[in-house]
Length: 212
Image 1 (cartoon, helix red, strand yellow):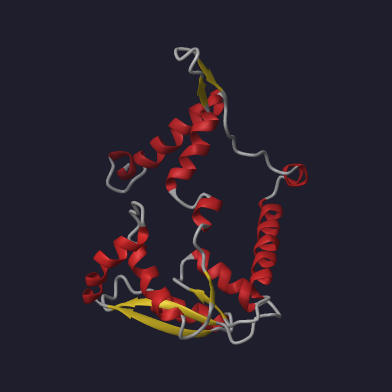
Image 2 (cartoon, rainbow, N blue to C red):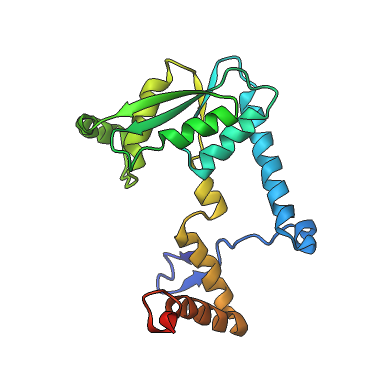
């Protein structure tokens, strides 16, 4: 956080605005991934349960990714869940389609599965969609979400999704780098951060070291 004053415009006051919170004492002492896993599952189950306490039909946007699949799992094991519909975008191109996996996940969780087809013609909606956003948005999933939301009213009023899961659980490589750079302050960790990527590169099948 950088602060300055109109009276002294050339003087800056620089303070740390935010830092990653330290793990809870109980889980830190346990030193096991199981403690974190159990806590995340408890929080996810509680959050899902609260949103299932609704007087209108509830559904879930299911992409077959880890985030929405975990939400679907939490819904499936909740006693409040009744006839919940899972909506999945489906593309004609097989390499982009997640329908097969999403269908299997919905079945395993006891959810009704509905497919929302998206074709090449769907790009015609982009100009109108951009006007509705109101701000720059560089995520290509915007089009998927648009057609899911458009079809949603037919099946339910409230829909849960896995959006934000990657941000909360550091699911993208960018977030992993934050932890790596923080540990560079430790000399031993600094050496490990250099050796590990180097060893991976040397042991690739197409490298000379890998051939040896």
